[in-house]
Amino acid sequence: MEKIKTEKEWYDNPNVLTNILIVFIGIIVILSQSFAVKSNLGAEDIFRSLLNYNSTYILVLVYFIMLKTKIGKRYFNFLNILLIIVYFLNTFASLLTVFQSFGITSLISCSLNLVILFYIVYTFMKDTRFYYELKLERIPFDEVTNEWYFYAVGILSVILLVTNLILVENFQSVVLALFNCIYMMMFARYVYLYNCHLEFIKKKKIKEKE
Picture (cartoon, helix red, strand yellow):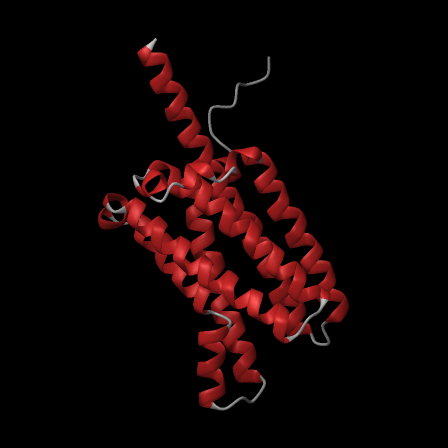
């Protein structure tokens, strides 16, 4: 007889996925700065690269590290709101990029950021009082299921990767594009699992009332 699996796979385990994301984001930041140094950029250019390219990664890294602490767990909803603000600013910046340098890459990147923004607002806000205070329940987030949000992020990430691979001219850009695609999928998986957790709690409360 086959053994029944009692342990979750890493992609179904939020704690394991969080640990992998922390390590992976750290690698992306280190690699991008290493590439900047090897390109013989000045200190000012390297610092600008850190702020422009890695600012979102660094803030998300801080978010996941905080989740491993007691303070982060206590103020989980507040951290989620800060994460939403980070991705709102990131989406706004990508929207400006579309107007400044209109192209297929900027359009796909903007679309991806918009989907991620809607996804995390739909997921993280609905467990807080702000969801109803801001009347977000009027926005039809539920028209798209949790699975389809996850698939949309995955599909757009792959399309963006393929586009970048066609357009990039150096090895460093290829590596960063690949790592960015993997990060997007893992981040979307994290949001997906949290959404599943909320749905489980919701169903549990309904059964208790019956």
